[in-house]
Amino acid sequence: MRILITGARGMLGRHLAQTCGGHELLLADIDDFDLADPSAVDAAVAAFRPETTLHCAAMTAVDLAESDPDAAFRANAVGSANLARACRRRSSRLIAISTDYVFSGDLDRPYHEWDVTGPRTVYGASKLAGEEAVRVHCPDHLICRLAWLYGAGGPSFVHTMLKLGAEDGPPLRVVRDQIGNPTSALAVSERLAELLAVPAAGTMHLTCSGEASWYDFAKEIFTLWGLKRELTPCATAEYPRPAPRPANSRLEKRLLRLLRLPGMPDWRDALRTFRERYPEG
Image 1 (cartoon, rainbow, N blue to C red):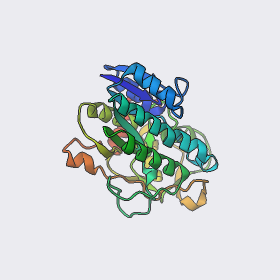
Image 2: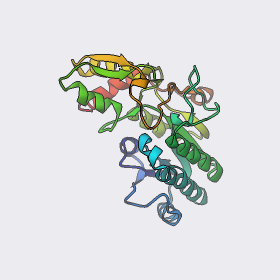
Image 3: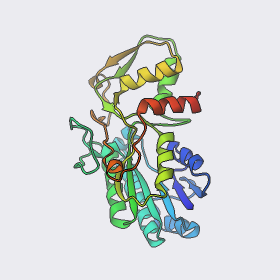
Image 4: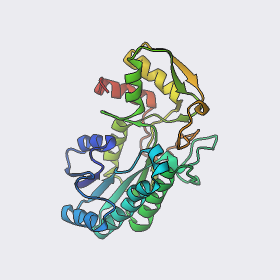
């Protein structure tokens, strides 16, 4: 299969390039063409003629987006719209990556794919606009929402914890009142490679199963890597950020279940697999 991967130098893009290595790949990043330039996007898609496009490119700097919303919407909304139109013209299936930030984070249960969205950040609003553009401009699409992603080489929460955990110092304070699904880019890339052959459409959640707080996640990282620095829980309010973090980032994998597809691995199992494959992170 001919596959175009945008954001190929990003964390998920790098994993996908390895997982999909048996296909004919075009690995594209910002230096190759600007997604916000419709002519450049159309020319690239027309030249490569991908059967499937894996759209990983995005502005993911959540706090920076609050002070530079134009950059966030240019990358995440305009860029996605341009790519979706080009994919439709060239009959390329579009698999686009999105985020839990499209939700408010206020529910007391995991969000499923048909729950009402309501982003509270510029980043979340720009990603939701990108989702809507994909739905409008490319009927043959699959939108895959992720959360709490980590992968080889980072940057990610895992890599931050490995660095801080190896340093001497007082107990490390980690937030305990935000809950989500720690998710391995390795597990996601393997599932996306399987979905290339599955005619699924619509919106799908692909986070790992099980749930944890950031504090729980950090404890598991410290245990697996044998880090000795102490951890102590704290509240979100103690670390105010420009962009509010969702209290609830849990995503239910309802569409996977309804399609009778295999579920995502438990986050602890996925973290152990990642540790075995990438012991240095």
